[in-house]
Image (cartoon, protein in one colour):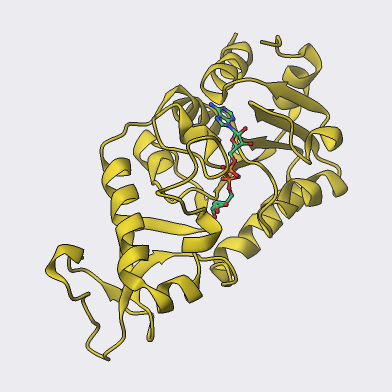
Length: 244
Ligand code: OAD
């Protein structure tokens, strides 16, 4: 694993505004499968085949089966050292924005505060038609899926491919990215837009761009510092160096 560059530590020490984008990779060490890794398929389906309005219209029970499987898995896992290192990092800066594509809620459980959840939250449900929050439980074994008072089908409150991201969250994410002096892209394949545009936007506005990922991504060539390895190992090293 690469040692953390002194120049990056200096840059972070001088920075007032820091933004971070996380993807499924940060939760991999907690036991949550990534989307595009070897364990990314559920049954024989890719995320792009299930996380869509069309898939839900065609077969809501199948889509729900996938979400309930993931919801159950995510309820049993714990934040890992990568999540906790980001909590410590937040405490070192006055202006720190954590933008996540993850729906697992692990950043919040770890203790991060200023979080923008771009793709929603897997624990929440809403009406497919009117968007109203639905508090009840969803049990597909009952045969019939729950419906809203308006008659619409209940769906998970997450963003699907082809849907717009929550406007307030994505607007704030772009703003934080444009203002950041240092931007860290962590555990994301950096191919799903608009989230994948955020690091590019940060760099275009002068941020020092840092990538932490097991593998190279389309962002690696653009990064000022690219660390190849586990976020649960590299992030705590950065925090230790900053605190020493
Ligand atoms: P991906 O599964 O596309 O990418 C995960 C990235 O994390 C890969 O580049 C891995 O190499 C890396 N990785 C795996 N383990 C790691 C570790 N321990 N430390 C650091 N890096 C690690 O996941 P996302 O980029 O989050 O959207 O995917 C983006 C979006 O596509 C998701 O939010 C989801 C998905 O389909 C929707 O459902 C709308």
